[in-house]
Length: 459
Image 1 (cartoon, rainbow, N blue to C red):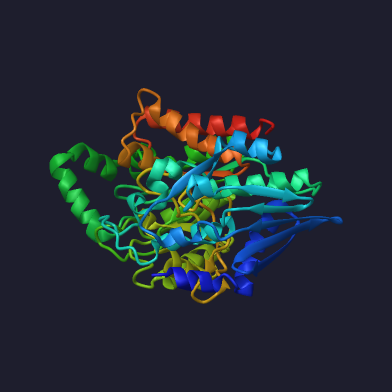
Image 2 (cartoon, rainbow, N blue to C red):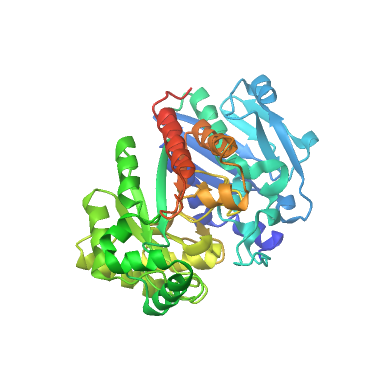
């Protein structure tokens, strides 16, 4: 567990300061110098002989490690009246600060903000609140109730991005020509199931088939009669349909395949037979992406490297690019340990991090970034692409009604938060979770909404 003292000590680390600078360089395409002077951060932004300095006091930092969830907001009107600038939401969140502590000063091209946003950004993007937390979830996943973002529904807001947008407005008002990001969206599909029988490991096949002979004899017989026809009618066979929808919107579907088994109960989904390989090849041939979906215990059993190599061999055999991205099965991720393993094997990106119960902004952002290992004081060489919504989070865990439009409105609300900050909305929808027309309609409506926003000029 990270202590407040240790956290304060590492803030003066040069590599950490450079990591902070990179976050802003990638977001704004400007030069950034980061210094930690007299217990506070000083960031100087410059481009084409224009510069502005922003000082963040240490206000609020001590509360990050407190069990008390001190929380306040600065309204859009307050910010506008103080320095005449806009913020992307109705307010800015100050976690760890009481309302009376807030102020912002401007003296020529130097701004002083009485809040330690730089430290909060380190703390939030690197999920330090998760370190050492013992989960009560049956899959040992970090739970929303243990996060400071549970308060006031902050998990539904990209509060780190909102602050960065505000800083971007300071730069623009100071005549620094910084990049203004545009909303985008992406879809991915965890291939937990390809077929009920085809290419399923023998032990699982025998069990399922014998049960079905007794309870669902027509199903079992139809498989024996015509396997291709059987597969064509399976609920899990949505691969062509999903790619057709993505083609319509000009986006790439990402299909993540499970390479190995580390749990008899939760894995053992399919073998890499010629049938499965031909499916993978078809996805690639159509211009969509295939990646890796690690097994249930891949991280805890240090099996990531073996699974990575196994799937890369399959892809090499099929002449498919092996610079893979992917996601952990059941969204099971131990932030630091899992990402260390992914960094070592050279994985391109990970798309696991969200709150499995609700979806939302677990990292406070919808932008990709590389995390910082605060123990080894180094940047991990794997990009985090935050997952924002999984269909199961909305329809199963949260049990939001699909029939009365509430599920669509819930997702739209989250999409709009990404839109406001010019970020990326990332949707996970499993290929075998389209057993009803209502689900297909919801999926299409979400993508239509995203497509409309993408083609709308942001103000």
